[in-house]
Image (cartoon, rainbow, N blue to C red; front, side):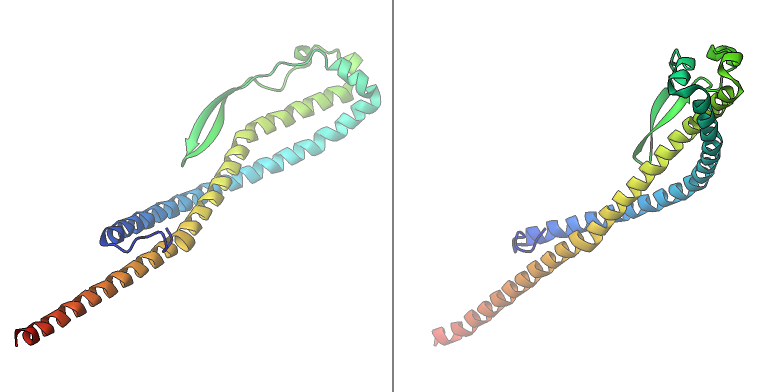
Length: 212
């Protein structure tokens, strides 16, 4: 609230003081939330970093094998070996951590399959293509396992940044503006009270003179 929009009345002063008190309490709650989000972020950071390391290692293993399979069969040949496409579904359940909306994978079938389950012939596909399929299925397993954790890490980071902005806005902008407005109203009320007291003293002095 700006100083210009705050009327110089005692009612406005009392309301503004109560508003400032609520503002300080809200900022305190936001600081506690920020501290909790920081702790949650540190708790998630190490497992996420380990998962990324495993994913990077799996990708380094899988992609060279894919290149060898492409060299042996070409893109059209690999598409033919991969037909029919696989219908893969997961069960997702929404959740919330410190007000941050997240999702958890509660159920999913295994990604890795046997050669028979893929419906491909080892002699027709070749050992390199089978190895590439095995590697990419393990790669997909790691990605699916890490996906909820990565999303949670990103959401917690976004919530932490948003909460920090809110605390900064309340403590550095809104509260100082309201405190300044309250100070101006208090000064105006004090000045008005001094003027009233001065007028009262002047009237009291004039009464004896009028009586004479």
